[in-house]
Length: 521
Image (tube, rainbow, N blue to C red):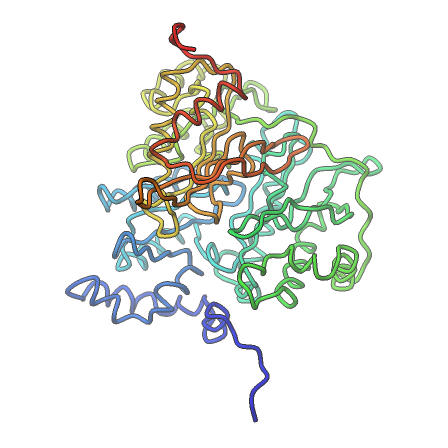
């Protein structure tokens, strides 16, 4: 008899064969093989290919063909909060790898370590356990780092402090950081954001589930958005679930949606497997009904309005906290890249001037909170602030970039170094009256989120003079904060070597820039 069972794509096949978390038991053996092999090629050949290139991602360990033998390690940092002890541990890890070792702040408020060797992973994970860090379920078909306001608990105007809710939701999904097989086989990756402020610091519209602060009958809670995502084939803003939930319901609702998506989400085509495709198939009313059936109770209808009433803040500079006589200072980290010495210095500043806490933002910057008023002036004299400015130039201030082809095999172009160099060159040529949000992403996977930028640049290839060259598609009109919406592609296939005059014209025509040389026209 001919089987009528649907043929699994390769990703569903290797998930069906072995749960991603199962490689936890193999780490010591993988490390031994890597340590004892004569070459990385020999080690690679001795380890199951699916384990090495795919399943390790369930532990946050990413094989990178462009850097043979050197892995990327992605942390989970709920709400973007890290302490000085944890930062020092991470600094020590990347310092071991010399020029190969660094850390990138991501657009989901966490850190990715680069240059990591497989033979060191068991020891690294022991260090993580000692200081309360985890990288579990941070890649592939799992829920990614859960984002929240980077000034939760210290923002004088916040509606609700979401840190505990973010942590509780992560603990539910990851089994308190040890791994939870209930949610290791989703149809695709999944993003959750829980916002408590007035300025949409979480970019609610690009998350599969977003909790947006809202009042109902003088009760503080959240309106719920669902289905937002970026992919190579489709980008959609999240849509209202028409539900309002009390803070006590956030974890349960997240669990319900994840379970329904796990059990019913489409899996045949990887390009059509995000949550929005299930919502399209069912309709939002059926989707909401299935959630209520799972929960065993009805959801309240959404509040008439939410509390996102401000334009987006970038948190750079000196800001008063809700706590009397305390301030937080936002530091601009160019293209989000940190080296071991930078990380050690951030930890030192957090200890000397604050309470040992560091916050990360989705704009790839860092915040030192809880600085007493009488210590701020001394803090501003620290040498690190010459590198990580509190008054960056307008074209650098809100510059965001994905990893790019230097470390990522998916990227079609180099992004980070090119982005920073071009922003500096344009700054030297133009007076720009206000910050311009320029986002670079190396490929259509959109890790750099070009669709939410004033100017978004997506890596591609084009032909020039008969040769294939690095190029970008240009997106315009993305808006964050109040009334957020996605930008659209306006130009295709601009060679990177020809990009600067195009950006220059866009800045002059659309953002009020003027040439610094008055003789120029």
